Amino acid sequence: ATAQIGVTGLAVMGRNLARNLARNGFTVALHNRSPERTRSLVAEHGDEGTFVPTESLADFVAALERPRAVIIMVKAGGPTDAVIDELVPLLEAGDIIIDCGNAHFADTRRREEALRAKGLHFVGTGVSGGEEGALWGPSIMPGGSAESYRKLGPIFEKIAAQVDGEPCCRHVGPDGAGHFVKMVHNGIEYADMQLIAEAYDLLRAGLGATPSELAEIFREWNTGELESFLIEITADVLAHTDAASGEAFVDIVQDRAEQKGTGRWTVQIALDLGIPITGIAEATFARSLSGHVGQREAAVRAFPDSGEKWQVNDRETFIEDVRRALLASKIVAYAQGFDQIRAGSAEYDWNIDLGGTATIWRGGCIIRARFLDRIKQAYDEQPELPTLLVAPWFADTVRDGVPSWRRVVAEAARAGVPAPAFASSLAYFDALRAERLPAALIQGLRDNFGAHTYRRTDRDGSFHTLWATPDRAEVEA
Ligand code: NDP
Image (cartoon, rainbow, N blue to C red; front, side, top):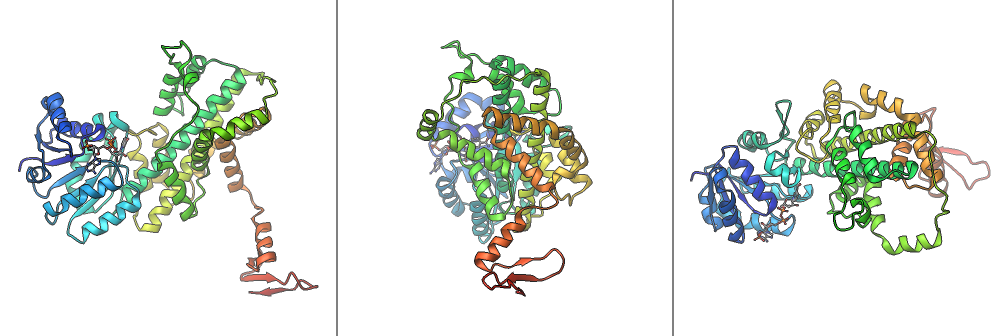
């Protein structure tokens, strides 16, 4: 047994992760259900490091040093369970199975519990950064036991992206914590992309600019507070011309956004936890809406465009307004995502370090951004921060952005350009900062029709008004 770690599942992600491990000096045992992938990996990249190719799971396990560390990188869901079931009889107490696929954290909790009962460690690990990340340095979010991290930490931290000398990897927390955090990461990614898309749409409509002109605006934004991977690739995509048609690439792509489901999971879990992640939810629903082609066609016919062009007067001010609105809305989306992590951590006893989570996301992953340093700093300074929105830099930025934010949302509504994530983020902000919410009326209605009781502002206790009686007397419930 010579390999320090093994990877089973050598499609694009597993292959690149195995190459990354080998390039960083680890001896990597290789396995894939169909041996062709194993063979082609060794044939094409065998010189990049030390690989131990195997064609049966028994040989694969036998190639590993003890305690064995086995990365599973197969299709999430049933295939992951199938591979675990095949592996378990071959392993011994203390061995570690690491699932780097996009598992639902509830599945990870179930698997971890079942394997813990057999004396095995199961480490559900979120990996972000796509193919390139897996190869050159992903953002890694491992859950599982602290004990397993003692073996895995040095390996993962070496192959992860590095920012300012710090790895974009740290132990997130027990059992499903890593996959939970990865899920929220993807939810935030949905919100971030939707906000960027709305900014693009507003700029395009308001300025009447071409995609390549808009690319310049995003390129410029990428030199400031918005600096991030997603803004950078937005500029790339907008600047790209389709070779076949000569049209702007963005104009020849069908406008139906697809999803693999992690955004949806984030929203579903947020509903269960009672956390209003409105930015992520709007982004997820916006993708769904874009796919309802029949409804969209019917509505286009029923409500044709007036043909009136929206032309902003002061271009520079408008661009700056959209930039500030984007930044403020993005702060809301991140604040909500971190609220969800805090809530998940409390619900499942994970004790997740929020500032530490921001550190993991500073590099390697899709939402990597300058901004994440600020988040880390905010939680380091005040671990019990009630919401990211009130941390000094975020509060100042939002305060500065509010007039722009209101102008953009109002102008979008007036011009009929949909900006659901901008608008709902602003509404969330206004609701959070309102001294009184109309929730009081909702409580009154609930008491009226269902005797659901209410609390008073002036004394403790639960009360019910006898709405059907002539004097509407109040009783203590
Ligand atoms: P796929 O999700 O396409 O899965 C293909 C791999 O799964 C192949 O190795 C295949 O083996 C194996 N497999 C499928 N069914 C079984 C089974 N029943 N038993 C054994 N092996 C099986 O591969 P990707 O590389 O795209 O993704 C791997 C994981 O990483 C997934 O969970 C995915 O969600 C996640 N992912 C993460 C990304 C990220 O950015 N973090 C990006 C993309 C994916 P065979 O070759 O024999 O068919």
